[in-house]
Length: 365
Length: 149
Image (cartoon, rainbow over all chains, first blue to last red; front, top):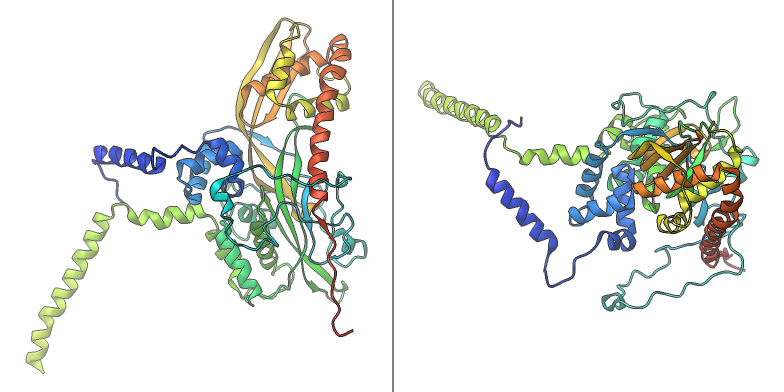
């Protein structure tokens, strides 16, 4: 148990200054600006926004700068900041079908209507260090096709839906408002909306490991990447003054539709099942992992035995948050002097008891 | 009194203004005479929870929050200008609200739509088309190679 301590003000102040010096690095090297971080380290910024659960590039970039590039620390900073702002309400649900697509691929449909669009991807790059970046240089000249992509690309996965080959994904009657983990604590059993919110802000590394575990046999879901799309979607809200929806800007999101092992029963013919991933920014690895875990967590609903870690909602959802996890693991650094003192006393007493018993045992032997 | 003009048209200009750069709006506002007005709500920054849908089309879920700045302004005729923008730039929300107010006046609107809103909308469409053309240049055809024949 952590016990409050007093004192150390000067040392703490000095440590803060030392931290600022370490963050700044060599003063002979120019300081990195928040705009540079937002513009040139956008994938790092995207992760901070997704797991910080706040879409604001400038704040996420600032958090990364303050945290000297430590993503989990930056996520913590962003989460803490959001508690200082009032909540105005909820957006209209994003319509990802109307996304201005910059990347859209499918591993299941070769002849995808609208085509496979690679976009700005590291796929197919050779992963050789590019030493020309050491020198800096000219902005690249980007090719443009004569025809832009259609304004809205149809969802690849709808091809299966037309034939009834995949489970339909429809709003429940009345299209109810979902539970909100930022307002009410996690409880079990957790509905899919709660699970998706938890996964959307869950630690990418944790979800990646869990998703990987499902591929290695810890739950069999036979996934295919039905469609991955990335681009800009309209952000619409209904202001209280107006009573109708207006667009207040747009945000970049990545969406992954995983097509999984089919299930059927005596009443329903076999059809593919779904796993879904959605995250702020360019976050392909994250959304793929999220979709794998989402599907694994649907085991009860689909009549599968929850045997593997990725299928156990209480295990997954309780450990996915890196702010909570980081806090609890790292609180071990804080003074536990009183707690430890009592343990120390106990161990000494036990040892003394054994030591005083031993000569007696020897005598009786 | 906020419903005096066509909601679809108002929805359009509010969307265009929210996507415009504050600098551009500021320059345009400098050329306009503003009526007497008072602020019902000074710009305030807060959060809105962004919602998605499971599978893109299913049940709603909460994805994460977004920073939003809003304000409201009224003129002596009782018109209400509303500014809602993503982000934390208070002046952007103010500019949106001021133009929303002006655009509700028939005479101002007749001028502002062709002079401001439509050129902004055209530029926003062009920027989107450029991004779309760059993406289209990365469109691939994958061939499956058959073996043994």
